[in-house]
Image (cartoon, rainbow over all chains, first blue to last red; front, side):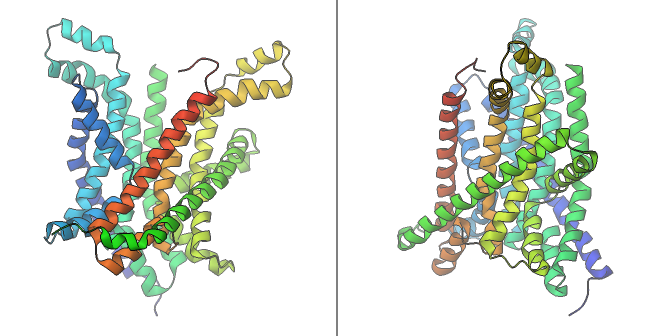
Length: 216
Length: 221
Protein backbone atom coordinates (compact mmCIF):
# COMPACT_ATOMS: atom_id res chain seq x y z
CA UNK A 1 0.00 0.00 0.00
CA UNK A 2 1.24 3.46 -0.83
CA UNK A 3 0.00 6.97 -0.36
CA UNK A 4 -1.41 9.37 -2.89
CA UNK A 5 1.54 11.25 -4.41
CA UNK A 6 2.53 13.49 -7.31
CA UNK A 7 2.61 10.55 -9.71
CA UNK A 8 -1.07 9.86 -9.01
CA UNK A 9 -1.90 13.51 -9.44
CA UNK A 10 -0.05 13.46 -12.75
CA UNK A 11 -2.01 10.41 -13.89
CA UNK A 12 -5.25 12.22 -13.05
CA UNK A 13 -4.24 15.17 -15.17
CA UNK A 14 -3.15 13.00 -18.05
CA UNK A 15 -6.53 11.23 -17.89
CA UNK A 16 -8.17 14.65 -17.95
CA UNK A 17 -7.03 14.84 -21.59
CA UNK A 18 -9.46 12.03 -22.42
CA UNK A 19 -12.28 13.82 -20.68
CA UNK A 20 -11.54 16.81 -22.91
CA UNK A 21 -11.30 14.57 -25.99
CA UNK A 22 -14.72 13.08 -25.18
CA UNK A 23 -16.30 16.50 -24.74
CA UNK A 24 -14.74 17.74 -27.99
CA UNK A 25 -15.84 14.62 -29.85
CA UNK A 26 -19.41 14.87 -28.51
CA UNK A 27 -19.64 18.52 -29.54
CA UNK A 28 -18.02 18.03 -32.94
CA UNK A 29 -20.26 15.10 -33.89
CA UNK A 30 -23.33 15.93 -31.81
CA UNK A 31 -23.43 19.63 -32.68
CA UNK A 32 -24.28 19.27 -36.39
CA UNK A 33 -26.80 16.55 -35.56
CA UNK A 34 -28.33 18.83 -32.94
CA UNK A 35 -28.71 21.58 -35.51
CA UNK A 36 -30.36 19.12 -37.86
CA UNK A 37 -32.78 17.96 -35.15
CA UNK A 38 -33.57 21.55 -34.19
CA UNK A 39 -34.31 22.43 -37.83
CA UNK A 40 -36.42 19.31 -38.28
CA UNK A 41 -38.40 20.23 -35.17
CA UNK A 42 -39.13 23.70 -36.57
CA UNK A 43 -39.75 22.40 -40.09
CA UNK A 44 -42.99 22.98 -41.98
CA UNK A 45 -43.07 19.32 -42.98
CA UNK A 46 -45.00 17.45 -40.29
CA UNK A 47 -43.39 13.96 -40.66
CA UNK A 48 -39.95 15.56 -40.16
CA UNK A 49 -41.18 17.18 -36.96
CA UNK A 50 -42.62 13.87 -35.74
CA UNK A 51 -39.46 11.95 -36.55
CA UNK A 52 -37.30 14.47 -34.68
CA UNK A 53 -39.70 14.50 -31.73
CA UNK A 54 -39.65 10.69 -31.63
CA UNK A 55 -35.85 10.52 -31.62
CA UNK A 56 -35.78 13.13 -28.91
CA UNK A 57 -38.30 11.38 -26.66
CA UNK A 58 -36.50 8.09 -27.11
CA UNK A 59 -32.98 9.26 -26.29
CA UNK A 60 -34.14 11.55 -23.47
CA UNK A 61 -36.16 8.69 -22.05
CA UNK A 62 -33.28 6.31 -21.36
CA UNK A 63 -30.41 6.78 -18.92
CA UNK A 64 -27.10 7.94 -20.40
CA UNK A 65 -25.60 4.96 -18.62
CA UNK A 66 -27.97 2.76 -20.64
CA UNK A 67 -26.87 4.37 -23.90
CA UNK A 68 -23.24 3.78 -22.96
CA UNK A 69 -23.77 0.12 -22.05
CA UNK A 70 -25.87 -0.41 -25.15
CA UNK A 71 -23.30 1.00 -27.55
CA UNK A 72 -20.29 -0.43 -25.72
CA UNK A 73 -21.49 -3.96 -24.89
CA UNK A 74 -24.68 -4.43 -26.88
CA UNK A 75 -23.92 -3.12 -30.34
CA UNK A 76 -20.61 -4.97 -30.91
CA UNK A 77 -22.20 -8.29 -29.89
CA UNK A 78 -25.18 -7.61 -32.12
CA UNK A 79 -23.11 -6.57 -35.12
CA UNK A 80 -20.43 -9.15 -34.44
CA UNK A 81 -17.59 -6.65 -34.69
CA UNK A 82 -14.98 -5.31 -32.33
CA UNK A 83 -15.58 -1.63 -31.72
CA UNK A 84 -12.84 0.48 -30.13
CA UNK A 85 -13.91 1.91 -26.77
CA UNK A 86 -13.51 5.47 -27.96
CA UNK A 87 -15.93 4.87 -30.85
CA UNK A 88 -18.61 3.20 -28.73
CA UNK A 89 -18.41 5.82 -26.00
CA UNK A 90 -18.18 8.58 -28.63
CA UNK A 91 -21.37 7.38 -30.32
CA UNK A 92 -23.25 7.35 -27.00
CA UNK A 93 -22.15 10.88 -26.10
CA UNK A 94 -22.87 12.08 -29.64
CA UNK A 95 -26.46 10.84 -29.38
CA UNK A 96 -26.81 12.39 -25.92
CA UNK A 97 -25.42 15.75 -27.07
CA UNK A 98 -27.49 15.77 -30.26
CA UNK A 99 -30.85 15.48 -28.51
CA UNK A 100 -30.19 17.79 -25.58
CA UNK A 101 -28.52 20.52 -27.66
CA UNK A 102 -31.12 19.99 -30.37
CA UNK A 103 -33.89 20.70 -27.87
CA UNK A 104 -32.09 23.79 -26.53
CA UNK A 105 -31.52 25.16 -30.02
CA UNK A 106 -35.10 24.42 -31.05
CA UNK A 107 -36.15 26.55 -28.08
CA UNK A 108 -33.88 29.31 -29.36
CA UNK A 109 -35.30 29.11 -32.87
CA UNK A 110 -38.89 29.10 -31.69
CA UNK A 111 -38.28 32.01 -29.35
CA UNK A 112 -37.72 34.14 -32.46
CA UNK A 113 -41.07 35.54 -33.50
CA UNK A 114 -42.86 34.00 -36.45
CA UNK A 115 -43.11 37.46 -38.01
CA UNK A 116 -39.33 37.46 -38.45
CA UNK A 117 -39.63 34.48 -40.79
CA UNK A 118 -42.43 36.23 -42.65
CA UNK A 119 -40.53 39.50 -42.91
CA UNK A 120 -37.51 37.64 -44.29
CA UNK A 121 -39.73 35.80 -46.75
CA UNK A 122 -41.17 39.14 -47.91
CA UNK A 123 -37.62 40.24 -48.70
CA UNK A 124 -37.46 37.34 -51.13
CA UNK A 125 -35.00 35.24 -49.12
CA UNK A 126 -35.09 31.49 -49.57
CA UNK A 127 -36.09 29.38 -46.57
CA UNK A 128 -32.41 28.63 -45.81
CA UNK A 129 -31.41 32.29 -46.19
CA UNK A 130 -34.25 33.25 -43.85
CA UNK A 131 -32.80 30.92 -41.24
CA UNK A 132 -29.16 31.71 -41.87
CA UNK A 133 -29.32 35.52 -41.94
CA UNK A 134 -32.41 36.44 -39.94
CA UNK A 135 -33.40 33.72 -37.50
CA UNK A 136 -30.10 32.08 -36.56
CA UNK A 137 -28.34 35.24 -35.29
CA UNK A 138 -31.24 36.02 -32.97
CA UNK A 139 -31.73 32.40 -31.93
CA UNK A 140 -28.00 32.12 -31.20
CA UNK A 141 -28.13 34.92 -28.64
CA UNK A 142 -31.02 33.31 -26.85
CA UNK A 143 -29.68 29.78 -26.96
CA UNK A 144 -26.14 30.62 -25.86
CA UNK A 145 -26.64 30.65 -22.06
CA UNK A 146 -28.39 27.24 -21.91
CA UNK A 147 -25.86 25.87 -24.41
CA UNK A 148 -23.01 26.78 -22.08
CA UNK A 149 -25.06 25.31 -19.24
CA UNK A 150 -25.36 22.07 -21.19
CA UNK A 151 -21.60 22.05 -21.70
CA UNK A 152 -21.26 21.79 -17.92
CA UNK A 153 -23.66 18.82 -17.90
CA UNK A 154 -21.67 17.20 -20.69
CA UNK A 155 -18.34 17.60 -18.91
CA UNK A 156 -19.80 16.14 -15.72
CA UNK A 157 -21.46 13.29 -17.55
CA UNK A 158 -18.31 12.18 -19.37
CA UNK A 159 -17.51 10.71 -15.96
CA UNK A 160 -20.01 7.95 -16.81
CA UNK A 161 -17.61 6.68 -19.48
CA UNK A 162 -15.58 5.33 -16.55
CA UNK A 163 -18.27 2.70 -16.06
CA UNK A 164 -17.33 0.89 -19.28
CA UNK A 165 -13.64 1.16 -18.40
CA UNK A 166 -12.79 4.14 -20.55
CA UNK A 167 -9.89 5.82 -18.76
CA UNK A 168 -10.85 9.43 -18.31
CA UNK A 169 -10.69 11.53 -15.17
CA UNK A 170 -13.25 9.61 -13.08
CA UNK A 171 -11.78 6.23 -14.05
CA UNK A 172 -8.25 7.42 -13.27
CA UNK A 173 -9.62 8.50 -9.89
CA UNK A 174 -11.07 5.04 -9.27
CA UNK A 175 -7.74 3.44 -10.11
CA UNK A 176 -5.77 5.81 -7.91
CA UNK A 177 -8.28 5.24 -5.12
CA UNK A 178 -7.96 1.48 -5.44
CA UNK A 179 -4.16 1.71 -5.41
CA UNK A 180 -3.84 4.02 -2.42
CA UNK A 181 -6.91 3.16 -0.30
CA UNK A 182 -7.47 6.88 0.17
CA UNK A 183 -10.85 7.29 -1.54
CA UNK A 184 -11.78 10.50 0.29
CA UNK A 185 -8.59 12.28 -0.75
CA UNK A 186 -8.53 10.97 -4.31
CA UNK A 187 -12.20 11.60 -5.06
CA UNK A 188 -11.99 15.06 -3.49
CA UNK A 189 -9.12 15.89 -5.84
CA UNK A 190 -11.08 14.50 -8.79
CA UNK A 191 -14.16 16.49 -7.77
CA UNK A 192 -12.01 19.61 -7.40
CA UNK A 193 -10.67 19.20 -10.95
CA UNK A 194 -14.20 18.85 -12.36
CA UNK A 195 -15.26 21.81 -10.25
CA UNK A 196 -12.42 23.97 -11.57
CA UNK A 197 -13.45 23.03 -15.09
CA UNK A 198 -17.20 23.58 -14.66
CA UNK A 199 -17.51 26.58 -12.35
CA UNK A 200 -16.14 29.16 -14.82
CA UNK A 201 -18.58 27.88 -17.44
CA UNK A 202 -21.48 28.04 -14.99
CA UNK A 203 -20.58 31.59 -14.06
CA UNK A 204 -20.23 32.54 -17.72
CA UNK A 205 -23.59 31.00 -18.56
CA UNK A 206 -25.23 32.96 -15.73
CA UNK A 207 -23.62 36.22 -16.91
CA UNK A 208 -24.81 35.62 -20.46
CA UNK A 209 -28.30 34.99 -19.20
CA UNK A 210 -28.33 38.13 -17.07
CA UNK A 211 -27.14 40.16 -20.04
CA UNK A 212 -29.87 38.67 -22.21
CA UNK A 213 -32.55 39.46 -19.63
CA UNK A 214 -31.21 42.98 -19.28
CA UNK A 215 -31.39 43.52 -23.03
CA UNK A 216 -35.01 42.52 -23.22
CA UNK B 1 -26.39 -12.83 -34.81
CA UNK B 2 -29.99 -13.52 -33.93
CA UNK B 3 -31.90 -11.82 -31.20
CA UNK B 4 -32.97 -14.00 -28.35
CA UNK B 5 -35.05 -12.47 -25.64
CA UNK B 6 -36.36 -15.78 -24.32
CA UNK B 7 -33.60 -16.20 -21.75
CA UNK B 8 -34.55 -12.90 -20.22
CA UNK B 9 -38.05 -13.92 -19.20
CA UNK B 10 -36.67 -16.17 -16.51
CA UNK B 11 -35.53 -13.01 -14.79
CA UNK B 12 -38.95 -11.41 -14.89
CA UNK B 13 -39.24 -11.24 -11.10
CA UNK B 14 -35.79 -9.74 -10.77
CA UNK B 15 -36.60 -7.08 -13.36
CA UNK B 16 -39.84 -6.22 -11.56
CA UNK B 17 -37.96 -6.04 -8.26
CA UNK B 18 -35.31 -3.78 -9.82
CA UNK B 19 -37.96 -1.50 -11.31
CA UNK B 20 -39.61 -1.17 -7.90
CA UNK B 21 -36.29 -0.33 -6.25
CA UNK B 22 -35.58 2.27 -8.93
CA UNK B 23 -38.96 3.88 -8.30
CA UNK B 24 -38.40 3.75 -4.54
CA UNK B 25 -34.97 5.36 -4.90
CA UNK B 26 -36.44 8.08 -7.13
CA UNK B 27 -39.30 8.83 -4.74
CA UNK B 28 -37.04 8.93 -1.67
CA UNK B 29 -34.48 11.20 -3.34
CA UNK B 30 -37.17 13.44 -4.82
CA UNK B 31 -38.99 13.69 -1.48
CA UNK B 32 -35.91 14.40 0.63
CA UNK B 33 -34.46 16.63 -2.10
CA UNK B 34 -37.67 18.68 -2.26
CA UNK B 35 -37.56 19.20 1.50
CA UNK B 36 -33.96 20.40 1.14
CA UNK B 37 -35.13 22.54 -1.77
CA UNK B 38 -37.93 24.28 0.12
CA UNK B 39 -35.83 24.88 3.23
CA UNK B 40 -32.82 25.96 1.21
CA UNK B 41 -34.81 28.30 -1.03
CA UNK B 42 -36.41 30.06 1.94
CA UNK B 43 -33.06 30.38 3.75
CA UNK B 44 -31.12 31.49 0.67
CA UNK B 45 -33.64 34.30 0.18
CA UNK B 46 -34.01 35.47 3.75
CA UNK B 47 -31.57 33.67 6.02
CA UNK B 48 -28.59 35.16 7.87
CA UNK B 49 -25.61 35.91 5.65
CA UNK B 50 -23.34 32.97 6.66
CA UNK B 51 -26.23 30.56 6.05
CA UNK B 52 -26.86 32.07 2.63
CA UNK B 53 -23.19 31.67 1.73
CA UNK B 54 -23.13 28.10 2.96
CA UNK B 55 -26.17 27.23 0.83
CA UNK B 56 -24.73 28.95 -2.23
CA UNK B 57 -21.52 26.97 -1.72
CA UNK B 58 -23.48 23.72 -1.44
CA UNK B 59 -25.38 24.48 -4.66
CA UNK B 60 -22.24 25.36 -6.62
CA UNK B 61 -20.27 22.34 -5.43
CA UNK B 62 -23.07 19.89 -6.20
CA UNK B 63 -23.98 21.43 -9.55
CA UNK B 64 -20.40 21.62 -10.80
CA UNK B 65 -19.18 18.14 -9.94
CA UNK B 66 -20.31 14.81 -11.41
CA UNK B 67 -23.03 12.96 -9.51
CA UNK B 68 -21.00 9.76 -9.88
CA UNK B 69 -18.08 11.27 -7.93
CA UNK B 70 -20.48 12.60 -5.28
CA UNK B 71 -21.89 9.11 -4.94
CA UNK B 72 -18.42 7.60 -4.53
CA UNK B 73 -17.43 10.20 -1.95
CA UNK B 74 -20.54 9.56 0.12
CA UNK B 75 -20.29 5.81 -0.27
CA UNK B 76 -16.64 5.66 0.77
CA UNK B 77 -16.59 8.50 3.25
CA UNK B 78 -19.62 7.83 5.41
CA UNK B 79 -18.05 4.63 6.82
CA UNK B 80 -14.98 6.57 7.93
CA UNK B 81 -17.35 8.84 9.88
CA UNK B 82 -18.67 5.73 11.58
CA UNK B 83 -21.87 5.60 9.54
CA UNK B 84 -21.88 2.33 7.66
CA UNK B 85 -24.78 2.49 5.22
CA UNK B 86 -25.79 -0.28 2.83
CA UNK B 87 -25.39 0.67 -0.88
CA UNK B 88 -29.06 1.46 -1.45
CA UNK B 89 -29.27 3.81 1.53
CA UNK B 90 -25.97 5.48 0.63
CA UNK B 91 -27.23 6.03 -2.93
CA UNK B 92 -30.48 7.47 -1.55
CA UNK B 93 -28.50 9.93 0.60
CA UNK B 94 -26.24 10.94 -2.30
CA UNK B 95 -29.12 11.40 -4.74
CA UNK B 96 -31.13 13.40 -2.18
CA UNK B 97 -28.21 15.77 -1.68
CA UNK B 98 -27.80 15.98 -5.45
CA UNK B 99 -31.47 16.62 -6.19
CA UNK B 100 -31.70 19.08 -3.30
CA UNK B 101 -29.18 21.45 -4.89
CA UNK B 102 -31.19 21.61 -8.11
CA UNK B 103 -34.48 21.86 -6.20
CA UNK B 104 -33.25 24.91 -4.25
CA UNK B 105 -32.42 26.73 -7.47
CA UNK B 106 -35.74 25.85 -9.09
CA UNK B 107 -37.85 26.77 -6.07
CA UNK B 108 -35.89 29.97 -5.44
CA UNK B 109 -36.50 31.03 -9.03
CA UNK B 110 -40.22 30.34 -8.57
CA UNK B 111 -40.39 32.46 -5.42
CA UNK B 112 -38.33 35.23 -7.00
CA UNK B 113 -40.77 35.37 -9.90
CA UNK B 114 -43.58 36.65 -7.65
CA UNK B 115 -43.56 40.44 -7.61
CA UNK B 116 -43.81 42.08 -4.17
CA UNK B 117 -46.62 44.26 -5.47
CA UNK B 118 -48.69 41.14 -5.94
CA UNK B 119 -48.45 40.34 -2.23
CA UNK B 120 -49.36 43.88 -1.33
CA UNK B 121 -52.29 43.78 -3.72
CA UNK B 122 -53.51 40.67 -1.93
CA UNK B 123 -53.23 42.32 1.46
CA UNK B 124 -55.07 45.38 0.15
CA UNK B 125 -57.93 43.14 -0.88
CA UNK B 126 -58.19 42.11 2.76
CA UNK B 127 -57.06 38.53 2.31
CA UNK B 128 -55.78 36.74 5.39
CA UNK B 129 -52.11 35.77 5.57
CA UNK B 130 -53.03 32.18 4.73
CA UNK B 131 -55.14 33.26 1.75
CA UNK B 132 -52.31 35.45 0.48
CA UNK B 133 -49.87 32.55 0.82
CA UNK B 134 -52.20 30.02 -0.79
CA UNK B 135 -53.50 32.04 -3.73
CA UNK B 136 -50.77 34.59 -4.35
CA UNK B 137 -47.55 32.84 -3.42
CA UNK B 138 -48.01 29.10 -3.54
CA UNK B 139 -50.09 28.54 -6.65
CA UNK B 140 -48.32 30.97 -9.00
CA UNK B 141 -44.92 29.80 -7.69
CA UNK B 142 -45.91 26.18 -8.23
CA UNK B 143 -46.96 27.00 -11.74
CA UNK B 144 -43.60 28.65 -12.49
CA UNK B 145 -41.69 25.80 -10.88
CA UNK B 146 -43.69 22.95 -12.38
CA UNK B 147 -42.04 22.46 -15.80
CA UNK B 148 -38.47 22.74 -14.48
CA UNK B 149 -39.23 20.62 -11.44
CA UNK B 150 -40.88 17.79 -13.34
CA UNK B 151 -38.11 17.60 -15.92
CA UNK B 152 -35.58 17.54 -13.09
CA UNK B 153 -37.58 14.69 -11.59
CA UNK B 154 -37.31 12.75 -14.85
CA UNK B 155 -33.55 13.40 -14.93
CA UNK B 156 -33.39 12.09 -11.36
CA UNK B 157 -35.27 8.94 -12.35
CA UNK B 158 -32.74 8.30 -15.11
CA UNK B 159 -29.89 9.30 -12.80
CA UNK B 160 -30.77 6.66 -10.21
CA UNK B 161 -29.07 4.23 -12.62
CA UNK B 162 -25.80 5.57 -11.18
CA UNK B 163 -26.61 3.77 -7.94
CA UNK B 164 -25.72 0.53 -9.72
CA UNK B 165 -22.10 1.68 -9.53
CA UNK B 166 -22.04 1.22 -5.77
CA UNK B 167 -24.01 -2.02 -6.30
CA UNK B 168 -27.35 -0.77 -4.99
CA UNK B 169 -29.82 -3.30 -6.34
CA UNK B 170 -31.95 -1.16 -8.60
CA UNK B 171 -32.93 -1.76 -12.22
CA UNK B 172 -29.57 -1.06 -13.81
CA UNK B 173 -27.77 -3.29 -11.36
CA UNK B 174 -30.25 -6.05 -12.19
CA UNK B 175 -29.38 -5.51 -15.85
CA UNK B 176 -25.69 -6.04 -15.16
CA UNK B 177 -26.47 -9.18 -13.17
CA UNK B 178 -28.63 -10.70 -15.92
CA UNK B 179 -26.02 -9.82 -18.52
CA UNK B 180 -23.33 -11.61 -16.53
CA UNK B 181 -25.55 -14.70 -16.44
CA UNK B 182 -26.78 -14.75 -20.03
CA UNK B 183 -24.13 -12.83 -22.00
CA UNK B 184 -27.02 -11.35 -23.96
CA UNK B 185 -25.80 -7.78 -23.58
CA UNK B 186 -27.74 -6.38 -26.54
CA UNK B 187 -31.07 -7.81 -25.45
CA UNK B 188 -30.52 -7.08 -21.77
CA UNK B 189 -29.68 -3.42 -22.24
CA UNK B 190 -32.44 -3.03 -24.83
CA UNK B 191 -34.96 -4.32 -22.29
CA UNK B 192 -33.51 -2.26 -19.44
CA UNK B 193 -33.62 0.90 -21.57
CA UNK B 194 -37.17 0.07 -22.63
CA UNK B 195 -38.27 -0.18 -18.99
CA UNK B 196 -36.68 3.19 -18.16
CA UNK B 197 -38.32 4.63 -21.26
CA UNK B 198 -41.74 3.30 -20.22
CA UNK B 199 -41.31 4.75 -16.72
CA UNK B 200 -40.26 8.13 -18.10
CA UNK B 201 -43.20 8.22 -20.51
CA UNK B 202 -45.64 7.25 -17.75
CA UNK B 203 -44.35 10.05 -15.52
CA UNK B 204 -44.37 12.59 -18.35
CA UNK B 205 -48.01 11.75 -19.16
CA UNK B 206 -48.98 11.86 -15.49
CA UNK B 207 -47.26 15.23 -15.04
CA UNK B 208 -49.00 16.65 -18.10
CA UNK B 209 -52.36 15.42 -16.81
CA UNK B 210 -51.69 16.80 -13.34
CA UNK B 211 -50.71 20.15 -14.78
CA UNK B 212 -54.10 20.45 -16.44
CA UNK B 213 -55.84 19.47 -13.24
CA UNK B 214 -54.01 21.78 -10.82
CA UNK B 215 -53.34 24.86 -12.90
CA UNK B 216 -56.67 25.24 -14.68
CA UNK B 217 -57.30 28.52 -12.97
CA UNK B 218 -56.41 31.35 -13.11
CA UNK B 219 -55.26 31.63 -16.73
CA UNK B 220 -53.30 28.99 -18.55
CA UNK B 221 -50.07 29.74 -20.31
